[in-house]
Image 1: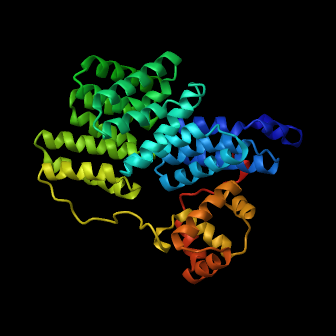
Image 2 (image 1 turned 120 degrees about the vertical axis):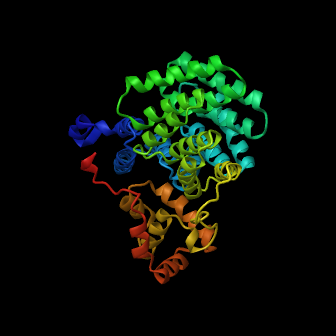
Image 3 (image 1 turned 90 degrees about the vertical axis):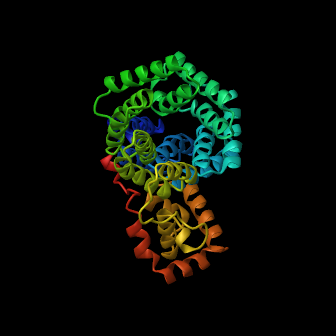
Length: 397
């Protein structure tokens, strides 16, 4: 990146070097830094007129939003990448995009949409190189959907095959995402050998990369599931707490709480299960929320005061923080390219955000949106609520 910055007319940035850095930062749990890097790279690509860069930046951007729990933003990026592919034939991001859409839809209990997205991802997987970044997530999503449909034997075979393919190709970083689900499925199928093997490989990966919270958490989570060790599962939740990966934190907290409840310790289980349910509610992960609440009921634990059950589907309260900020910038009279420059996102992503805003508010024109945003005072509330959307200086990357 330093060489690209020093190159004449920034010619070195014709290769999307920020993509590589973004991938690395995601794996290091430096998710805010990853987002800043990817936004800077997107802006440089647009300044240089490199339209083909967009597809490259959507892929790590989707992953960053997904693992950071910014699921509405992830869906927006996925839809923008699908639109880009339809307009340009650039299909690089479709496999990963459909896979993540399947995972989000599954967690939100929209099984039909999850199945459709997984089928589209598998279609891309079958027709492309299986070493493409995160391509194995198509099989991971397919396995979880099969499990949700009750086809547990096929689900286990699919995920075990995915693991074996990753091992064959040397894609060991996929272990952190696939490992806990495979241990859980292996134990349900009484395949202790597979569960021990997966736990050992994940533990080895964590030991080779010390100081990365999510890797340590994944290893502890696999060990806790294998041994039914509530202490290891609680330690996994603590490790995830420093890594800004809310779904993984919630799953570990739920598993720890469930183990403590099984061991007759409902008082220790409750705070962990409450933590999991709070995160699930924030993510809109209704499938996971229902499962965690069933654990609470089974242990005879009553939930305390509930927070919000999730964002409404329509109306001003349904807008995400980024959508409110986009609306406020429309009210200021900015064009889509100007909004993209302000927020360090592509103009195509701005267009997708606006499509969501128009649909949620039942509006048809920018003038109507500007009037509504002004009436709501969105210029202040929108910007204050979008603290999770960094606006970095390009030089900082």
